Image (cartoon, helix red, strand yellow):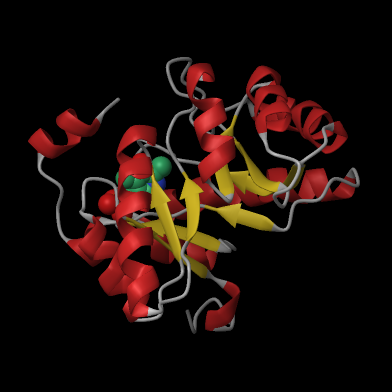
Amino acid sequence: MEAAQRGIASVELIAVTKTFPATAVLEALADGQRAFGENYVQEAIEKMAAVESRRATRGTTAPEWHFIGPIQSNKTRAIATHFDWVHGVDRPKIAERLSAQRETGRGDLNVLIEVNLDGEASKSGVAPDEVAALGRTIVALPRLRLRGLMAVPAARADPPSQRAVFAALRHVAERLRGEGLPCEHLSMGMSGDFESAILEGATMVRIGSAIFGTRSAREERETTT
Ligand SMILES: *Cc1c(COP(=O)(O)O)cnc(C)c1O
């Protein structure tokens, strides 16, 4: 943090609670944590309901929910209804559905575009050269607010290669801002590489296991819907 010469307030922690119970959210809320990340829609909705009923009696502030998982088109309505932020929009069809399905009475849904920095066809995310076009599509849609970019690069063990890939995302964001698109947030960095992400300009880090402990493979499988 000091090395990056940035105030701690400029990096927001998204506490990733996938596979962890509602009590984990309630405890973190009581400690002052506000933003929570979830990957699996059904698991998240159940957890939100459990948190909501118990939080109200304790008088704790409402959490802010971030959807950080892959987005299937049959899940967009639930995401638009229950979440405040969506990390990882990577195609126009998903953006259009989220826009159409976000209730008018609610605030705009905050959107980040997922960028594929590894260039593997199997990975989700748009290629860096296609980000601006998707950005213009999102900006033109009602009830969505483009806030920036996110990436889930393949895990790299050594800090220099971690930093290189995060710097690449920062460069895409700089290019977008140069074209007049709103792009103030960079959601990058997880338990294994968040220091490198912060050094390269992350404004949001998504951290699960470093806070809540390791998730078992069994839990991951059971909650993958
Ligand atoms: C699970 C997950 C995280 C958190 O990962 P940890 O290694 O537990 O910190 C962050 N981002 C995404 C997209 C995830 O799926």
